[in-house]
View (tube, chains in turn green, yellow):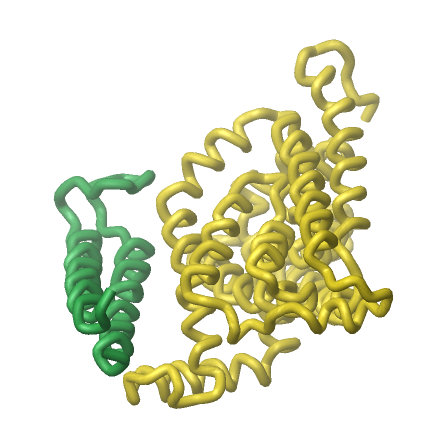
Amino acid sequence: MRGSTLSTILVVVGILCIAIAIYYIIPGFPHLFTFSDPNKSHTTHFIAFLAAGILALIASRFARNAA
Amino acid sequence: MDLLNHLPELLQVLFLAVLQGVTELFPVSSLGQSIIIPGLLGWGNLLTSETFLPILVMLHLGTAAALLTFFWRDWVELITAFFKTAFAGRLDAHPQGKTIWLLIVGTIPVGLAGLLLNDPIKAIFFSSQWPVIPAAFLCLNGAILFAGEQLRRRSEPDVHDRYKQEQAFKRIPQLTFLQATLIGAAQTFALIPGISRSGISMVAGMGARLSHAEAARFSFLLATPVILLAGLLEVPKLFHAPTTTLVIAIIGAVVAGIAAFLSVRFLTAYFEVGRLTPFAIFCLVEGLIAFLIFAPISLGVFSLPW
């Protein structure tokens, strides 16, 4: 896989993860893959997906520079 | 507050603190031991009881603190490497640049699995009063360690000196990102009580041709953020605990930390030339004995006298 393609994929993954993080922090509607009250905000999921999103965006820079 | 009035509880916590501190790092499954041994002592599922949760959180934080203390130079280097590589956008911006990203990549599978599967797994494996399934998985853990070690022997160079044999294998920075991901993915099996996190990640690391010492080091470095974050996320449970419980929990954390520090010091020296075989035998024997005791009890054939 070319570095520029990988970089683009990682940017998409990063943005997707950040969007999922926002989805988990907003209360008032059902959240998938949660085991306590699905309608409340889920901080652990928020932190995990936000961290994954940021890491994917940083990794996309590595891939772009390596291209 | 009089700790003497809570002496039996304090002694129980001290025993479990040593057990947690030692078994978290030895490849013998801390989760499995923390279910099987209280089961054998007639304490039931003590570690999953609501009143014991604050203490368990502190024991994990004590273990994480010990790992951070032992590897503090590595972590200072690795955190520096993270920021330098992130700002430069290049892995070679710091000598430890690749290592920190191998650790991050290796942590993602177990982080995701912990987030999505921890509660259903707890519901399955902690539902029974008697730890029959963890005992069976402890046997399986022993078999995995044994198989990993046997496969490693086949790929070792034909020399008698163990140091020379170990030098033929890789160091952590020589891993590929795919290998780090697979080692991290192997760790997810340790969510099952009886399967050891350090054991299975060491076997996976050895499968990627790391030396024993480097596989153990990678396993301990991978474990640190996982144990620390898992502990920190549970900290809110401490807020509603009574003062006596908190004091006992802090004493337990210190004891668990000391036990973990001594364990990691021993294991890093041991794996310079040592093998996984003694731990494999221990898991097989303990798992088999526990299974033979708990299986008839769970079927109602007999009961423990205590």
